[in-house]
Image (cartoon, rainbow, N blue to C red; front, side):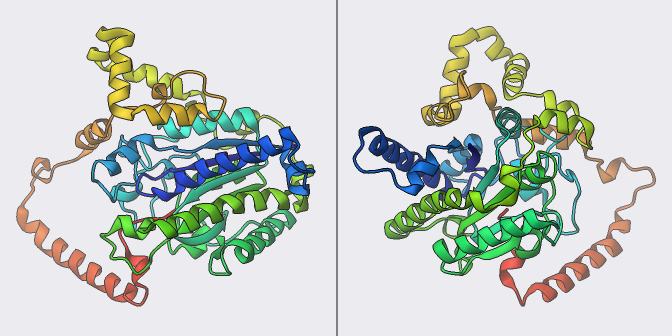
Length: 396
């Protein structure tokens, strides 16, 4: 039996990726119907699919998506101002020199966000063989590591690399960057889901796929940069990458670590490693309860007020999508907080205003400003040879 956990729509502005998740669900439904009704003899692919469990989260970051639909087309973070793909307990909180809080704020602690808490619970429950995190912004097939410019050592990592190379030929025409995300994407990323899945959860095949990117688009045109803008390209992209997931399943038996995978629950592994954190016990439903307790209007209004509030914030589609996974029995709105106000207040509380510093003089800022300006100009000059690397926007 193979277990595959997949997440789509981790970043709000990457509108194309949830469409792939929905298309995959349609394809699996059609294949299941054909096998159930005996339309034709089972193919090798269908026989393999009968031994495969898919756990599909078609829209991970519902509140970030909502902000994009309301016009914030460059927003990638969740509704609390946190990047879900920096909120995992794998080298969490480390900041590179090009760290941009507007793009990749990691949150107050690992698993502080409802999206990552939900996925952690699914990981602990299913102990998957494959983790697939689908993004857009370029064409790439990434494996660990994101926080290092290298891939792991050993035959298992080499097998994963060969599988990605095969998929590059089959579904990307050889165009995709293949290998370590930290080496190929142009920057190092810390606290990512794929690094956590590989290093902490022990998932042997942990991948991040980047399925579309217009590198000629202006860096301020996020819709065009991260998403196809015509129907033909949308359809071709969605159909191709949904089929690529089925191709990945066909290649699973070729991986040496799959059959030998230790199915020890992830929570036990995490408890003995560097991941000793109270966040492991922070479930998505607990976050939802904390939201209601902290909002007097919700607490006083009871269930009817909560339901009305959730419908206004999340819309009806998110509940249906999360319930498609089959594991979340309660309303998906239990798992999401409201907006960016929490993050904003935290930042306001932590800021040290220059005017509050003892002996402060505004004249002190002049030489500092000049040095910062010179540093910015020198850094820009060094990166002008590769304009896509200096974009404000992150992909992974």
